[in-house]
Length: 296
Image 1 (cartoon, rainbow, N blue to C red):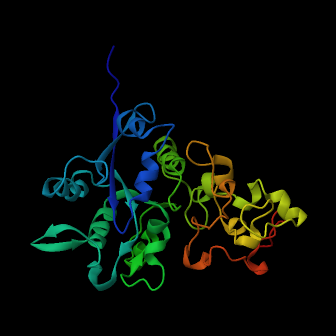
Image 2 (image 1 turned 135 degrees about the horizontal axis):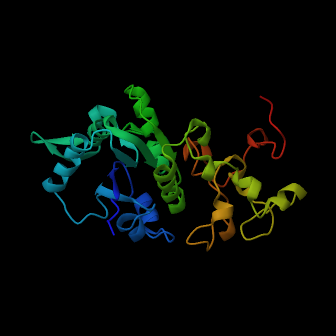
Image 3 (image 1 turned 30 degrees about the vertical axis):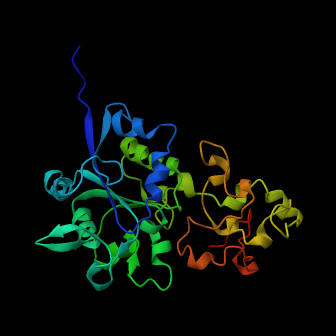
């Protein structure tokens, strides 16, 4: 029997201003496992060829940087770029560098600019990569920026999918990659206004929260550990889009509100500044009319 040719999909995963938490989260993927994702055919007939990922690769130093530098030339318009972490841009990006060129430190922002130009699409993994996140929080001395803001500032037009979360659920990332392999790049109607896949970020946490009935009945917890809606304790579920209450974390073990903590809104633009103080009640003006059709 003739052997079916497997399509190789090159992926370059660069970490910029990152705590590596997004990588750790994705590495904890259970079904499929990260082994399945990297070694097996995630989609029959299609295999991911991970060219660069600093956390998991065995190589180091100049040899692997040559691979990173050579990918845009070797796989022009044929690789998927994953960016993890916010990108330092102030003072030429000197506050975050990766390797050297001509004897000088090479800013991460230069790497990102070079890699996005020949990528077929970019996946911004985590809230820092998508929106700036913690790294871009005030006063932001390094001028950290999310990928979308950087692309607009540099007038680079490339397809972008944001997969925010601090960190993102592994299913959000693996599911996004699988969808791209199966169906191609998402259509505009598949993404929300912040370029997040609606399949994972299409509903407010408040809509599916197991404590929602308490909210409707006006029963609110006044201190941690009490039954009741956590709105008085600062829950940001009414303004946060993600499927955490349905998907749960750690292979369906638990999630923030299930563990007694209010949602801190980590999937939203402006996190953490716009969601702070985390344990202070949202103003009534910020609460959406859940279940009521919004006027256009």
